[in-house]
Amino acid sequence: MEVRIERAKLEDAELILEGQRKCFLTLLERYQDHDLNPCNEKLESIQKSIIEHYFYKILVDGKFSGAVYVHENPDKLHMKLHTIYVLPEYQNLGVAQKAIEYVEKIHNCAVEWVLETPHDLEKNHHLYEKMGYVKTGKTEKINDRLTIVHFKKEISKLD
Image (cartoon, rainbow, N blue to C red; front, top):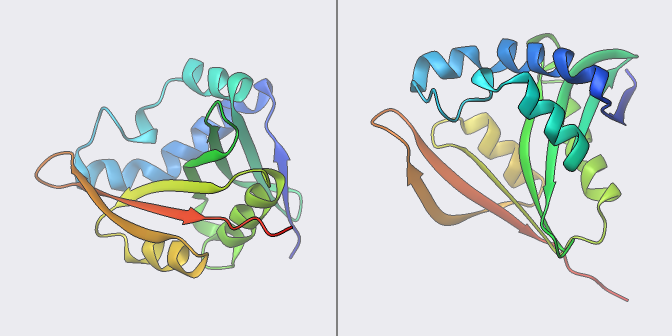
């Protein structure tokens, strides 16, 4: 199995949105987080993110299998793993881990990475902790069904 990550182009926006809807619909139904859930994102928003930030397609054996959206702070030292998803048929194969490793390597100037994930998605927590992210202790209650947990990863720069 070959996993590749490619910078998304504007013409990939519809494919990315379709994937988001496929991956996040069950979470939307569970959490009822209509304003935040990537399932409800508009095509124009994804297009803007592709132009202004870093959106990557995840390809497994040449087939679209997910996406990663990375937001860079103006100082280029602090990065946010904004959204990552892997289509269900490619989950539990190490694809997300390889995608995170790739974006961290590409953005190797970063001294800190942050991300947020729902409180009860233990598989996500396990993956992020395995990748060196730690819970910050900060949480945000979105509604009665959803609390967001914040993670961060500090990168030491050795000369």
